[in-house]
Amino acid sequence: MPDLKLTVNGIEATVLADPSTSLLSVLRKHFHLTGAKYACGEGQCGACTVMVGGEAVRSCVFPIHNVGQKYVETIEGLANSAHLHPIQQAFLDASAFQCGFCTPGMIMASVALLDRNPAPSVEEIRAGLAGNVCRCGTYSRIVKAVQSAAKAGRNA
Image 1 (cartoon, rainbow, N blue to C red):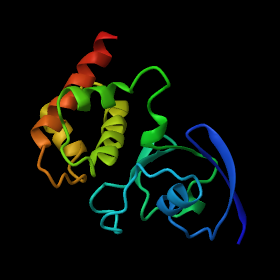
Image 2 (cartoon, one colour):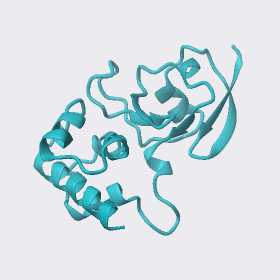
Image 3 (cartoon, one colour):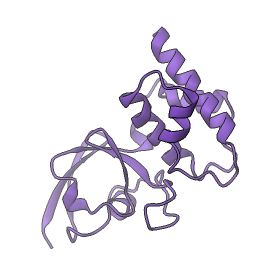
Image 4 (cartoon, rainbow, N blue to C red):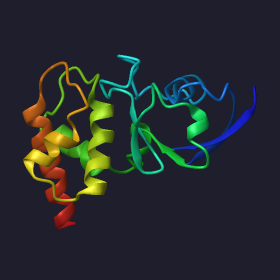
């Protein structure tokens, strides 16, 4: 197995792993980051969503050899020591979660959406998050949270 260099949430590390190992496995086992969740294992539910090179990916099916030199960001890397990320704060303010299982993936998908489109319509938000499943059904509050974060970003 080769040594692979990864930069996750600003921390560079060398990982000894098979290149076909999923990014989710490496994040959880080597970096001890548990925000991204293993759920379907097929890239269908979005619970494992993280950012790689600024793009949202399903880490349960994303092999680490595809990371290359790209920066990996997880839910644990969004907030700084003093403040939550605006999306995290908006989810909290809107009570956009119940059990919290989907929340990290939903937040990361929302970050990617607002990076691409800082002022999405309700329809664009729904389409942008359509691949992320919320078992508790808080979709309307999630949409409100994304709208709030988008508005806060425009007013910043």
